[in-house]
Image 1 (cartoon, rainbow, N blue to C red):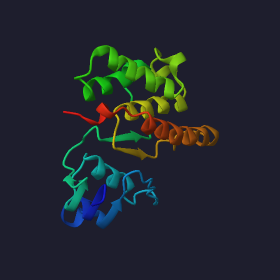
Image 2 (image 1 turned 90 degrees about the vertical axis):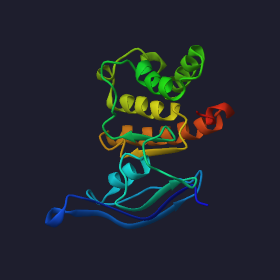
Image 3 (image 1 turned 135 degrees about the horizontal axis):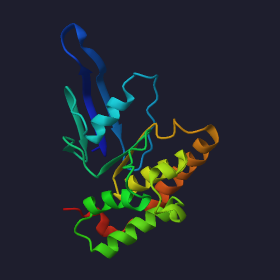
Image 4 (image 1 turned 45 degrees about the vertical axis):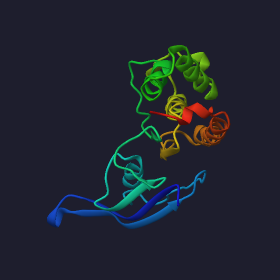
Length: 198
């Protein structure tokens, strides 16, 4: 059985003569631990495909399954990092990450959740700015916060929707390598009870 599988997935928008078919009969099978890049021109349906995998949308036809279970709604098992950062501007770096951690790991003691947040802030090298708000950070730093928040939820799948497209070439290259390193480090340091969510 595939880890993530899309079978005959189709998705369109609108109705009648105004209907636009974005995806048609998509079949995709991804193994656990596999890294996959979806490439296509603007408007080809990459974000729609990612939204279906994330559970933000449902296919018009076909199915999306994770470990044999139908994907019907969003879940912390499938974290997504968008190109526009999607951070709450009134919260600090720490609090943006803590918001996700507190929701996903609400059964953990408060000190354990705090330590978990600090670990991911350190992992993306943002400890010196942990109390700053997104508006006080450069673009690359804001995207690091988004990556840390996604990884701190301990997802089974990390979806990246062109998260580096708004950055300059040098920052993009550095952050691309950093994301790969952080994902690898995150998986190596995973604690067994993190996988047992109620």
